[in-house]
Image (cartoon, rainbow, N blue to C red):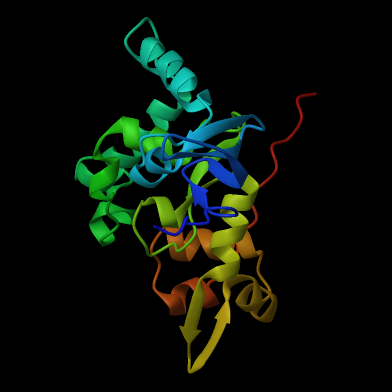
Length: 214
């Protein structure tokens, strides 16, 4: 007699198996908790095959998203997906030099919006952006998350290591040592593409304040 495979505690898509529910005619049903907070009972076969990945919330959300995409407007997740691909694949995109131009790619799975949405889910707020955990890595499920603009910039500045004149430090560390704002240093190196000697040594120019009208 075959031994029952214990799925308790395992994760399948948005579902985490909590306990066995029942067995009916050689089919074992497991109680699962969904990321949305709902619960559902799913057969072991459907969990393992990937046929069931949520309590039904994903199908409902995607149907709404798909209808919106083909209606009068496009959902924010679709816009994020389209812009992500464009800056990695279109050499005419103004940001291409910082993405596709330096080898940043979009994984094959995310060539379809449906897969991107299934992996990333709904954007939490309008302030959230897609953020690569490894700034030199690809756009892929294991390397991406939703993050606010502040978290996005902070993550990149705090994790990127810079070697200059035989010493290695993060951008915030170098900013403290050379006495310039860390955001200014991050912009020089990551956005403007300055060479390190210029980025580290050129003084920060304060913009002249506009005089108030009399």
